[in-house]
Length: 160
Ligand code: MG
Figure (cartoon, rainbow, N blue to C red):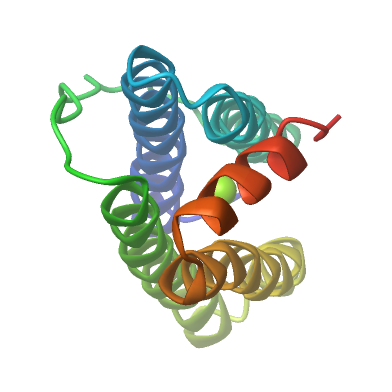
């Protein structure tokens, strides 16, 4: 059984994952509207990933006898500037998510809930990947000239 404090933390994390999904889907449609099909497609795929994270966490909590409580998802912003600004926002969002995951791991360790510690350590690793992924795109966009931005759009269109 998971403590009520950790259940609250995990429910908040599920909300954050679902909100991330909402944010990336909104970014995807924003970029589609601007004609950036590849960047849009990539973020749409990523929105699906975030939804999967939420259900993985909810399934874990259920397996441990905890109660999943889905909370209200805030509206995502709808306006950005350039493609770079969209991806910079996504990167800073991922950094915030990483901090939240770290806090859950810390609380799990404090409570000696090793199953929860173990489960969320996978997401600590996942966040390293996420930040590297978004950071890599931000980095390329910063270096890219106009043609580079088009080239990267074509490359990201191939994400499965
Ligand atoms: Mg996630």
